[in-house]
Length: 152
Ligand SMILES: [Zn+2]
Ligand SMILES: [Zn+2]
Image 1: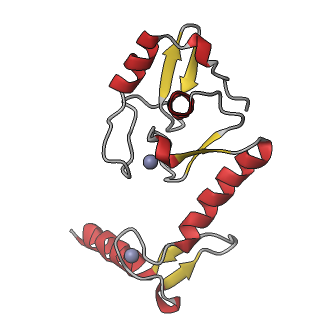
Image 2 (image 1 turned 90 degrees about the vertical axis):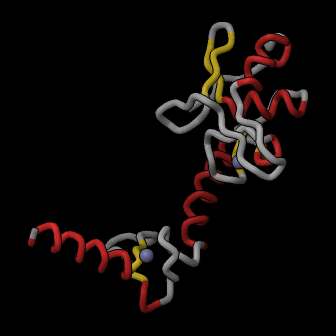
């Protein structure tokens, strides 16, 4: 999928202030979410005749230049517009790199969403997948809840 390119010359001062007024600007190291996201989770902004990804606009405005490739998030939050969380790679290879980072980020986590450690005893590997992994404590709790619901 080819992203719409943004040409800075096309972004008027009004567009710029309209853009930043829709970003929740937080601390320097926080995520700055855009106020409207599409189905893919990315912030979207309509400028003149096309929609642009908000992260792309944020990078372009912050760096005063057209991003030469796809704009990725170091924070993995597609709606985020904090220029400090955005980085640009060269091309298609970078698209793969985004996806690669996302897949591997999950595997580097040491705890599940509920804070249980991914120790060997507590890790269930979903059959037939390489990356699929579940927390056994959470599975047990889900089963317990399910049985309780059945018994009620
Ligand atoms: Zn962020
Ligand atoms: Zn868990």
